[in-house]
Amino acid sequence: MKVRFWGTRGSLPVALTAAQLRAKLVASLLAARGRADLDSRERIEAFVDQELPFELRGTYGGHSSCVQVEADGAPPLFLDFGSGARPLAGHYLRQFGGAPQTYHVFLSHLHWDHIMGFPFFTPVYIPGNRIVIHTCHANVADAFLRQQSAPCFPVDFAALGAEIRFEVLQPDQTYDIAGYRVRAIRQQHTGDSYGWRLERGGKALVYATDSEHDVGDVAEMRRVVDFFALADLVIFDAMYSLADAVSVKADWGHSSNIVGVELCQQARARRLCLFHHEPVHDDATLERNRLDTQRFEKLTRQNHPALDILSAYDGLEIEC
Image 1 (cartoon, rainbow, N blue to C red):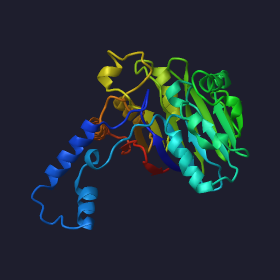
Image 2: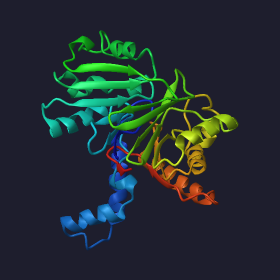
Image 3: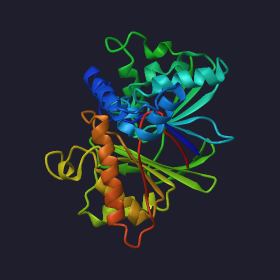
Image 4: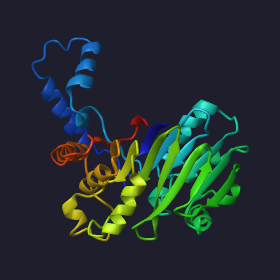
C-alpha cells in the first residue's frame, strides 16, 4: 500500500501567513550568511534540501483531513474528504483524464472538516464516475445533501454527474471491499467517530483520527491496542499536548502524541504518523512536537520494538 497525505490539519483548513513566510525567508538567509559556495542553482538547492530544517524548507500545509491509499490491482481509496480532496481531484484528473473510475471513500465521521472537500472533488461532476462512500453513520446522505444545498453551496447535490453511493457498515465487523479487508471501531468523539483498519497483502494500515482515549479505562485501552495490533502504519490524532488533552481540552474528542506512542508500543505497531494537527500550530511548533515525540519513544521503549515516528504533512508519501 502506498499512502499519500493531501490534508493533515484538524478542525479547519489554515494558510501559511505572510508573517510566517517572511520568518522562514529571514531564517533561511541567516543560515546561508557567509557561505561563498552557494554560487549556483544546484548548490543552493543542495543547501536547502540537505542543510535547512524542514520547518524552513517546507511546510506541514493547511488542508483538512484527506488521505489517499493506493495498491496495485485495487481502485483508488481515500480516508476522509476534507479540503485536501480538492488538490486530490486535480491529481486524478491528470492521471485518468475523463476516463470513468470508481473511487472508495471511508469516513471517520461527518463533521464538516472531514467532508467539506467533497463538493470540490471534480470527479463527482463527471458522468461515468462512481463514488462509493463507506461510513458507520446512518445519516450520511443527509449530511452530504445538507452541505451541498442552498444557501450553503451554489451547486445542488442533485446536479452531480457521477453515481454517488452511500454504504453504511457496522463497526466490529470485517468486510472485503475494493481488494482490502476492512474493519471499523467506534471512537470517543462528539457524534461518534470511527477508526478504520485496512489490510492487504500482509500489511495493515490503521486510521484513527478524531478520537479521545481515556488512559484510565483499561478495557477501552485494550480494545484500541487490539485494533492497532502489529499495524505497519498507524495514522493517529495527535492534535493536543498531553497536558492540554487531560486538562483544558479534556472531552474535546482528540488525543495527544504521548498517548499515540503508548498505544502503538503496546500494540507492537511498526510506524506512527502524527496527524490532525492543531490549526494554530505553525511549522516550527509541529516540528518540535515530532522531535519531542521521537525522544519520548526512545526513553520509554524498554522491551518494545523501536517505533518509527513521522509527522504527516500535505504531500507526504509512505510505503506501507
